[in-house]
Image (cartoon, rainbow, N blue to C red; front, side, top):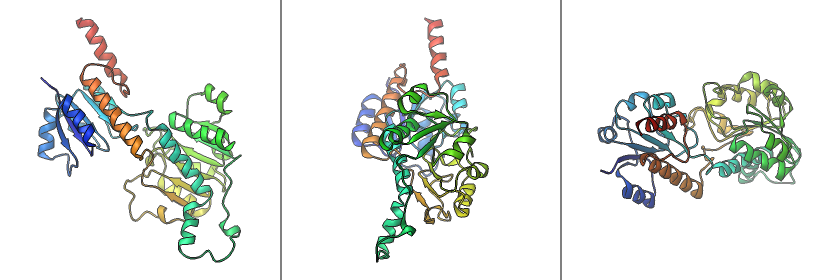
Length: 334
């Protein structure tokens, strides 16, 4: 008997066809509520779940007694109760690697756009204010040769650091990461305690995952340690930064500018001053949002769920303990 799969979100026709070939598929393009009766009925019989941007509360797992695996079309997995999934022996898979370079492109685009005031000066022209040669009031900041401070140096952080070091001759500092001797050799990267990094870097870029330990990692104290000329970039998760503290730092001139692809509340509240500030470049969480990368992420999630429900190890697995437990159980029963 074929296993049942619940898919949530927009999928391309060829992805739907692939899933229908392997599973009994229930596809929900958009849910108004997790209490939707049709969704709950499908979930009650589901062996697998594939989705993006759907926050899964622990209580929902109680309504999915047959669930074996979840594949999220994302790298981040803060929408999922990992401990509860592990306790229930449910595999959680994500999609690292395939979006690394695209997200790094976005991160470095924010560095460039904030430093050279790209959006601000494009609007300057649109308003018809370019009436004479520009002066110091329109000058930006050099990127080449400056110091790039990476808070987090995982796959995406390393890709941004490569762009800075190899493309722009930037000195790279890093903190909040295990030692990276290969990157120290490749890029000349230097480890710093975070306080020291914040005081030394011209550009501070955050790429750490959101965990209980990193929530509001950057707040009033950390902004006060930065130079008034510092440009701050966040492409990690919005809740890594204390947003009111960021707004205050920008308003007080404690830092020069900010480039943001993520926010504490998404979509961003219309009441937020951030997108209206001249020294802020605000984007609607587009880190991996290209046709090529989103297609590759979906395909990775499909590959993950197919392998998981066939009893094989997924390519990208979050809770390794579940796989180890299953292997141990298989060995004992075999």
